[in-house]
Image (cartoon, rainbow, N blue to C red; front, top):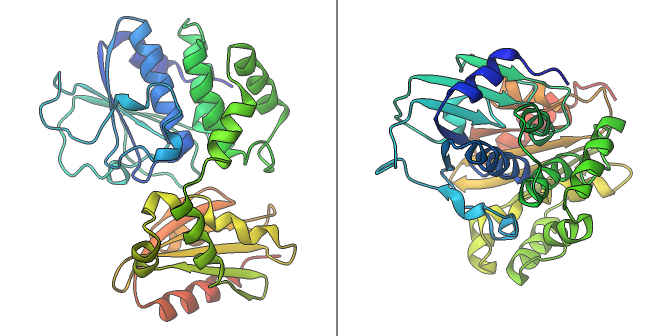
Length: 317
């Protein structure tokens, strides 16, 4: 993987970096941010990692997760160099006002925005963590056990633990190097998939009971009342959208999560090269990857669902 020279120059010359990633962070966003922070600080630089939302409990096995801050007030240094990871627009971070001198974007999403003085966006890369592996190595930083765990988790999440079509020989070679550096695949997989809270499990049961399938398109719903009834958190819904894809008949899965009355966040997952849900999400102001995307909409559930179904049914099978 070829890294643009201006990205490396930016990281080598800067002394202080403010690293930010998207709201509702997943394993790729978290692992990539922590790994880059650890790598840069090993070179004697200062970093701050920001996410508007707290690190979900099931990601707190990642070494360095406590580095994240949810505030941009009273920072330990003024922001001169801003780095966006796993997203390519400032709005996705939830930061409303921020002053900086220069900015760089490192991301792998298919939908691209104009933000960033320096941009390295690789839609073909399986994960931002994969891109960061090459960056860290090119900077001459040793891949420590802590960095390896974070990068392995980042890649594992975005490849469905090496089950999705973006699992290439390159991905497996990098994963092997990270294992050799100290990442434990069994421990990471168990932490990601076998350490659920009871409230999260009970929420999943309620969500699956809303399942309806229309022409190979699975629709599920999670409401605010479900969160109240189970005591689960918003972050607990991560990966819920993937469960209907266990059914052979399902080609696209859509999860509607109620944010407030008549306001929903929709997550989309598809299988097959022809089903580019990123394009569908972009039509609604969202974005993502070919087989994993999302957007938000202000409408009642029935209207939002019918509008989406109409769009999804235009995709080739």
